[in-house]
Every structure is written in C-alpha cells, then in structure tokens.
Length: 211
Image (tube, rainbow, N blue to C red; front, side, top):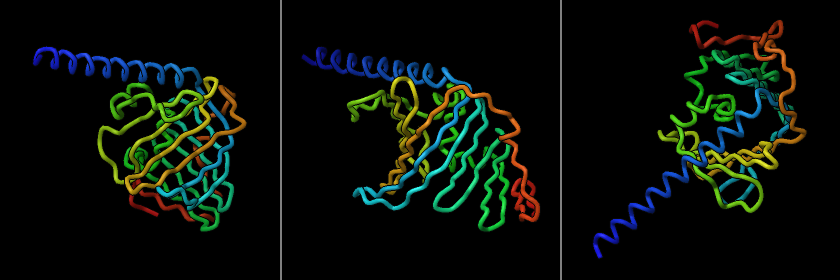
C-alpha cells in the first residue's frame, strides 16, 4: 500500500511538471508570434472586495525585444517609455521627466515583461494555465522571487490575441488591463521609444544622480 501511495504521488508530480512545461511552451508560442503591438487600453484597480479604486485609459505600443511605450491619457496624462536600457516617466502636469535605469525599475513595470524573451519569463516565473476563466486561454505567471509590489500576473488571450492582463498585489488589490483595437506587427519607428523631454521641462536623471 505504501509503495502504491508513493507511486501515485510521483505520477501526480510528474503530471504537474508536464502540465507547467506545456503552459510555458504555449505562452512562448503566443508571445513569439508577434514582434510589435499597438493597442488602446483601459486599466482599473479594484480592491479585494471588488470596489473600484482607480480607472485609467490610454494607448500603448511594444517593440520586441525590450522597447515599451505607455501613454495614460485620462484622467491625468502620464507617459512611460523605455528603449530597453533607460526608463522615462513624463508627467505633463508637473512639467517633469524622471529618468531611471531600467534594470533597477523593472519590478515597478511588470507590463514590460511582454517585451522580454521567453528565457526571462522562465527564469523569473512559474508558468501554468489558469482555469478560472471559461473563455479564451489564460496563463498564470507566479514570480519565483517575492515582490512587495505585485504577485501573480495573469495573461488572457482570445483568438491568439492578448486582450487582458491582471496584476495581483500582495495587499489584495487587482490591476486589470484590457486591450482594445489591438494591432499586431504594425511598423513602429524605434525613435518612438527614445523619449525626448519637451523644452522647459525639469529632468531628474536618477541614472547619474544629477538633475
């Protein structure tokens, strides 16, 4: 009987490992199917009880590998851009641009993972299917190292298009990002991802310690 129980546990573990590898490979194929993407987005933050705490709308673009553009239009404008090395955060109302080293800020911009190679995802996340949703194909990315800013990341695909992303925080809040008017593999100029501060705007460069 003891041997039978051990065998059953072994089979369950083996099945779970195979399942995770299948999910990881499936996600790789879906993300590798495009080199660039443009879309409009709506971003809502809700509490664990379901109460809406914040809603933002805007437009975004990615150019793989490593380039990312995120423009919040309402209710307050903000632009976040990276060329794969530096990260710019532009706040027009404050007339201020903050420049950061991307590697030091990457944990604060989890959406940026969409531009990464599959090797990065496998090294930093345990990837499995999320079966809580009836429609589409959903993936749960659980960080291998704990973060104070976010926990699981959930990606939702419909008809092989990424249409939703959810970021769960350790405090129980959920950030839900829905993509609309999605355009796959549009031609994007790389200059879009090298931010140029408008004239008269204060630049706080945290990569050099100078402003």
